[in-house]
Image (cartoon, rainbow, N blue to C red; front, side, top):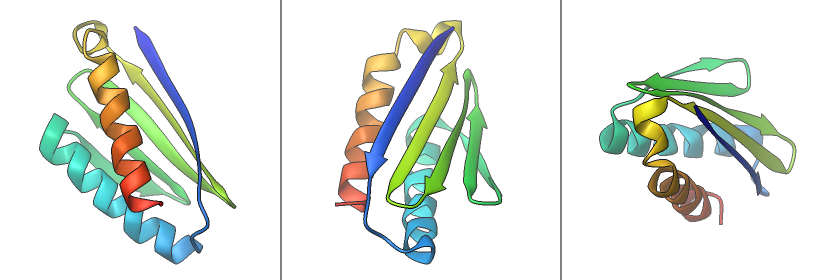
Length: 91
């Protein structure tokens, strides 16, 4: 198993963050086939070989993801895509 951890700063309100994270979840879904659901202020996502969370905190998003054996080989592209989309939505 491989783990992704990202701390991404932001200056959005909670409502703006939630809307932007819905867009991020849509990108992850279309690109990697993951499902998502909200648990309070945390967006949980899972799919074939991936289980993760994006926690909204004041001024920062905390992304954690566990990748299964086969997805571990794609850790670099997955992490790059998450960082790219977060930078795009939380610039």
